Length: 89
Image (tube, rainbow, N blue to C red; front, top):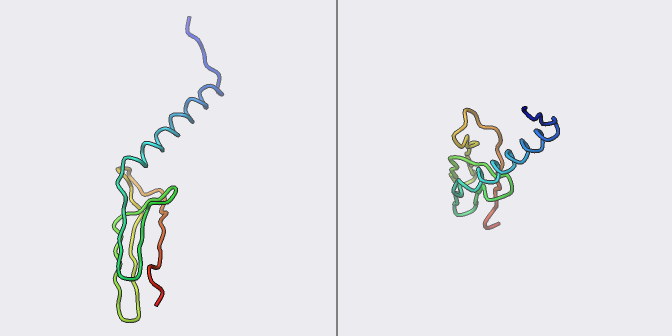
């Protein structure tokens, strides 16, 4: 005879699998960082996700470009990064 699992048991097991997947998912990818003379952009924060960063500094302007990294998925689900000013001159 087959045992049936309650919906709660299935939900807890599914949540544990998802949590473990997210933990191993983030640890599997190397840090993404870019720096210039004045700015630093990184994904090394909680839930960080960053792809293809670039920083271009002009005389009076700064252009910081980036995108969300799909990490092998079919779409990019979130973008989260930190932009720091290195020197305030």
